[in-house]
Length: 156
Length: 429
Ligand SMILES: [Fe+2]
Image (cartoon, rainbow over all chains, first blue to last red; front, side, top):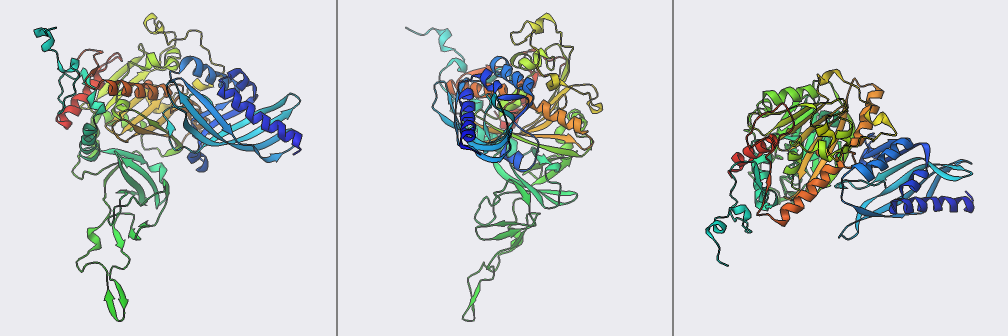
């Protein structure tokens, strides 16, 4: 992969982090393709080939419904997210497709609270490259935590 | 200011002091003292009296250990145990504490083992928990002399792992440290057994996976959450809006004779809803899904009507059927103010791939990230915060009166009152 393309890829990972950290859900949605999949799954399920996931969304419609849930229907303690995303490893690439992964750490800060390590894991991605940039075909967030700290509201 | 007689006679719950010996200073169980959730002493007693004696506790599904030698590490109360398949039709549950130096030797969450070896001194146990061998039991020969070794009267047969009593039914495994516990079927009682058998009717279960969450609240709050049919139609917008659980749905609340176990049984309504139900602020008339497949429900013959049956098996597990999503939810306390909540989702051997897909899709409603269940963990956390803040106070469970009775509607907190009636008897409080 050329430096130009790798730079765009790195930029994409950081843009994603900025969008979720700013709770900028329109931008977040815009990073996905229409027929995308988005899954947040424990490493235990992933390693054991068990299909269950904490969140498993197919298609942008479901992603929109999730955002509606987050903003309108699920009662939860407000919190901030801060993502630290490593530089991506390219697993496979062709002209229009990139298979890549990157590690992430999510810190959670609640009102009146102090930042805590909330979730750590890796993104396993299939990305589409086109003239209008990179879009997510599928993103699998595989987290190491055996226990989710009570609830998981926002996307990782 | 001199206190009048009236003020002096204030009941305990208005007094800002916490009783040293907790006394149930309420008339009945429509009031629940906060110390029931905040006292560490109460918690230790609960572990002894509810989890380790007299009760059957959930350990897992047979589908989690399909092959001979397969094991799963789990807990009963706060004691680590191993569920292991000894043979095709025999499952053992053993305490994960070495008979020698007390080490929790099994570290893997699951696996396959011919025997269990404690790495510390390599004491070796078979899958029934019997001690098979001890290194250097007869000492070591040195200069023609035997040196060291265990005492003459040391007998491996006296040093098994703690073996639990095991009951399996319909592919679900329960165990008890108490070998004098009543038979599992009697423990559930006839009416709860009917609902248990409805869900576990002999078909083989297929494991779909887990969702684990750590909830910073007292474990009883989770039992109460699923004995509380008042909240789903209010807290859970999805349930109200799509008629999955609403005050005007046809429903029943049932209990065993001791009031410890319960079932909330409900049949999904049309979705239009009466004014009483749609006037609640969580009802969103205009809410429409971008992807309606979240609610692509297929009626299954085994339901025999109800679209949701939520069972609480006291003290350790919740059995969930919410339309096509079926799971067990295991309550694993850690201290009085926190518990781990382990969801095991499954399907049935005769499920079509579409049905498996449907169960997985509907699982988005449940678990720590669920559209419906995420808020349950949150309200439990904040309830605990309230209890810690004023442990001398009490909560109220008076919906549907102060009596304990089965109902044919869901506007009642009778199941919570029932649970505390039983709790007080067993705890001697
Ligand atoms: Fe709930």
